Image (spheres, each protein chain N blue to C red):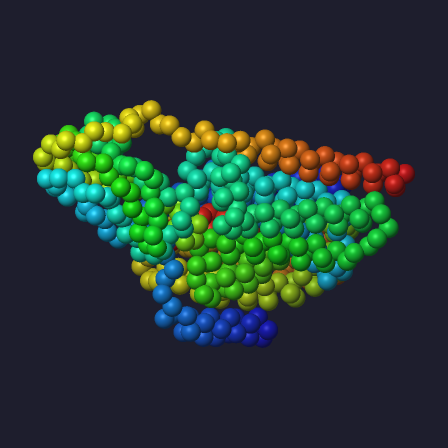
Length: 309
Length: 173
């Protein structure tokens, strides 16, 4: 079998977006099953795309720490997708708040909604800066470290993540920010590795390093997620009686599955890769399995963020 | 063992955090706690206004409250006003007997819209005259729509990324 080419890798990562939409639908169904007043709808689809783009940028921007380098073109394209999706997300949110269809939102109403908090426009601005980074890197001779892309991705991600329910609470913004950044680094880096690492030697260099750091990301995201859920839900019974609780249960099951897959990969894949064993396609297949589950959980996360607790 | 040590650390941190935060109250979504007139109230004469009280202060923009009578006409007077956790709308002197429906849509502090209905019944005919009919909804069509701007911006971004692609190719060759 010939090694997967760039297009196949890109398609694999792009395919994560529809899988995230599956997670969003699951969140909508759980929300409705639990009788939540406000569930995820079609208006959350742009939010899915913005999350996917921000997560991938955080992964691409932190690749140098794993001894790999992202393609500046990929960074620019993902930045473009992020910018466009953020604007559409702002538009959908304005329509939702005003209570009209997306086609009927007036310019005045849009700016009124944005005056009361515009996390999506913060994200759009960060995304434009990412495009600027890619242009500078590709077209001119200036070279700004790619880590700045990860910082921009993180700022945009956190702005959106802490804007809704968490914004009205004292400690929630900190918990949610840590939770979102840790999860984004974990998922985004795996996707970025699939996109950027070439050949057995590439995996041999980057995968063991990723596997060393990944448990710390899990260590950061589990307690922050658990405590956020406790604050929002207040009781154990509401885990199963409210829509919000059911989505939290779904996310926990997904995380359990992910940790199991990751533990299996640590035992088999990481030692294999370190010894230059196993083909490149095998590596991509293993990463794809884990990415698919990650995408469902991220879709659930988008659904959770718009569901009323 | 390394992984066992890690698991123990996670557990310890978790317990500590749970202990610290358990006392914190839930930051829930806005919900309606009471209304004047009360739900399913039987009234002999119409009140001067309808007041809905929520569990937390609301955002002041985009609060909408309408009162639709049994004749399908609007019976509120003017627009809804948000005052802390309360939203109120003035009422015309009521007319026909029957069920009056109060429709509300407000934005809670966390930015999520909350909407619902309340109902009260008038049992004695009043002398008031109705406002416009609820079926011929006037409104919304005010001002320039925002969608051409959004579509335009998306096209510009796509063109920019396309230009970046072309220019970098040209530079390489």
